[in-house]
Length: 352
Figure 1: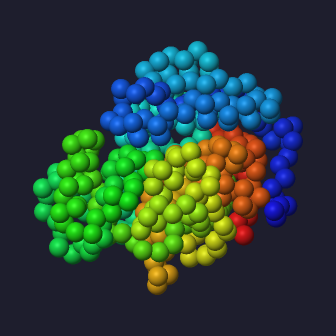
Figure 2: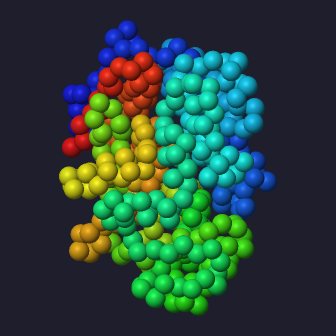
């Protein structure tokens, strides 16, 4: 694997690392979630946060894990961390309400790694994200938001169409049946989703083609690392990052990445990051149709942050470019400390 010379990191004595770090994770109880699938996407939140905590402790830093629930403000006041890693994706099972957590950190004046209240809230509304991107010249699939299964269908939408939960991430309910080739199937799908999850449904034109994920790390400059998805497990007619591909027992065998380079896509990614008020790091899923056109499908302000041995997309893509998890961890902490002091940030390794 190529190693960028910028990827070597100075010692703890050269740059200021925090002494005490709090890692916040989603408080997960089965009764919070509308389905077993939604619950499973968050079930390992504490376990994965502990893995990050172990890496942090190896740097000589004191770490405490805290659940993102109503006890959080008092725990933070007692512990008084130098900085916080916010890994809370859901609050009492709601993606939308996860934006409460950065709000608490702002009120307590605690520096934290990750997007703020607005960035997290926007990320939990896929339709609004799509419209914001479109208004700023970033290509997206033609879509419609459904409040009920009986809503009028925009006649300009072209089948096949893919239905997604508008506020829930994690590929919940994404499978071959999520793609509709006719109105009857779409109506049945909408009835199922709206009755089970009681949230609005985003229906998009399904884009046939390749799919890439772009990871952005914010340092002195914004660096973008892109990996093309290689689906090694044939699930059926439509190539999608389904719930099974993302969370199934064969996930590591079902999906891998190879380097992908295009300066145009990097610029689109940087612009999307700014338009959506994201900070520190993010991940974007993009389709490339047969004509080479890009379509931004999913924008995640709080992507799964773990080392590559765990198998998360973000870490696997960074690993392709020789960007180690420990160096990423260090830079994020140092940059957060420097931001709080009004100092210049460190740069991340150059994406090739």
